[in-house]
Image 1 (cartoon, one colour):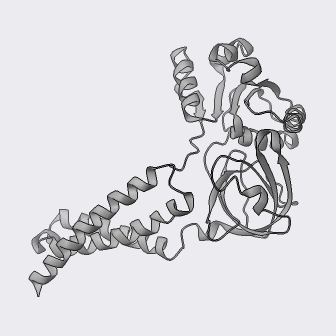
Image 2 (image 1 turned 30 degrees about the horizontal axis):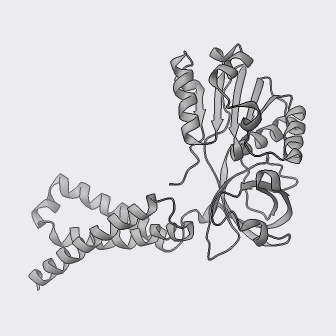
Image 3 (image 1 turned 90 degrees about the vertical axis):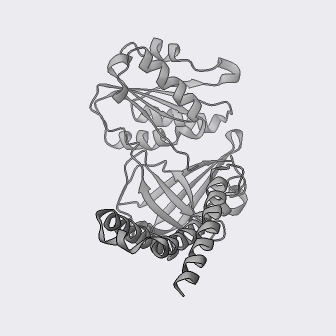
Length: 318
């Protein structure tokens, strides 16, 4: 019987290992549909349980009486508990709140949908720059979006700005409608503009402008003491969207720089430094394409900006 268990454990462990390799590979392939990608987490949890069985059967009994066995047992127990949380859908449950779509605004020129959601009780608030998971279609599952509004407990509204970049986001304009029930989970993230420096430089590329819109909304209500320069880079152009950002910047007392690459050329570190002479004593906050942010970081740090003064939103799930 014991030999049969060992043989079964070896076979299951081998196939589980192959399954894990395939699932991790699929999770890293960006062309793999998101609604299937999110399911890989549960499939990985099942594979993990089979590997736990594999480990328990094949580990020599003497090892469990030694420190290495104790550590292994603790790790297996923690992993198993986490697996059951995933399989029973309890991850993030305490952070979930129901809501209803209050309004929808589209900006065709920049391929953006802006939705305002009226939340039910339970949301504990957020700080500008954080994100949340939104579910509007159960079969599609949750998607992460940066929150584009400051929190006002009297109004209990959340605004999200979503650009048509993938298979699901391209469907949102036709799928969403006023009055639709949705589920929100969050908030998450540490891109919170939290520093005490006299000057901040913001760079929002494309839909990366979203956290800065939330912060401007906050500063229009609670005026800060910092000088702020916002550089918004957008290849697409919609006059209504630009007018809204301009009004938000004015209300928050922020100096706005609009860069449209087809017309103005690409934004360079040199242009930022020329516009903000005190950049060495400022903090730089970036949200946008990762390669662009990495290039900015390397250039500014190479020119003397302290590494602790550079902040980049790594808003990429895979």
